[in-house]
Amino acid sequence: MQGIMTGKDILHKMKAKAGFGSSSSDTGKGKSKMSKHITHGYQLIKGKSNHDMEDYIVAQFKKVQDNELGLFAIFDGHSGHDVADYLQSHLFDNILNEPDFWTDTESAIRRAYFVTDSTILEKAVDLGRGGSTAVTAILINGQKLFVANVGDSRAVICKNGEAIQLSVDHEPSMEKKSIESRGGFVSNLPGDVPRVDGQLAVARAFGDKSLKRHLSSEPHVTVEMIDDDTEFAIFASDGLWKVMTNQEAVDSIKHIKDALPAAKHLAEEAVNKKSKDDISCIVVKFH
Image (cartoon, rainbow, N blue to C red; front, side, top):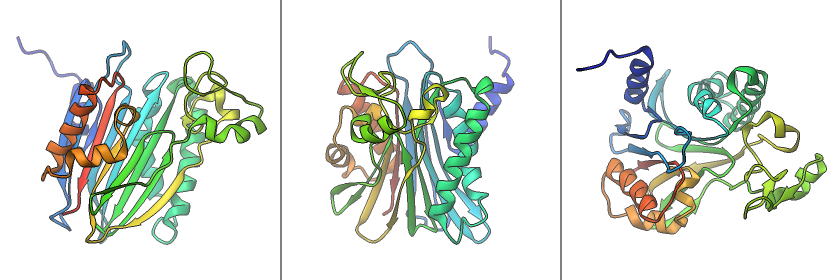
């Protein structure tokens, strides 16, 4: 017998249609209305852990005034998924509501990251003490791409067959001095990777109230012009990058014409390579 659809089910369907995703397996696609040749596809696959899916994505084209924005993001939650869910719903709105978004986009992104993180910390009673990494991309009129990130979710573009990383993996070992200057420490124990205060394997993240004195939420921001040599972009959580290099990811999909099959192929390749983490992947094709 068919069950009754709850409000949560309806919201999930609405989000999926709009290009928001997170479940055991979510997939979708879309295309630019301004530049018909620009398309996107996404795939999420839940990992083998016992906790709920903690990856969230945004992938949509949005008309703002006389401009079209491509909004793409990967949010990889940890110690719970509420912070990542909050980011999915609020971060882009906060960026676009910055008064100087159109005149100084990079500063607007940096300020919105700070404001959003501050709000998450204030709402820790409701959202919990967990956190999330993020990689966000704003494509303006199909020509100019602003990429920002905190943590180890990654953005890679392909130009003439070559993989170019636009984000920075914020690893604790790379930021050890700044972490120690704030009173924290970096340790490989327990476990086998460097962690802030022996707990978190990234040096920058949203939330994580208990570690915030020793963490940063300052994003790395890159601006990339989309030209005739730019073939496609990949945005993905570390569930993909733990088992594939940038060039391997690019090489595995460069002969796949459509964005959605490309995103599906990448996620499935990560599973085949024994990734146990949640995997979320967006592919944006420019030609």
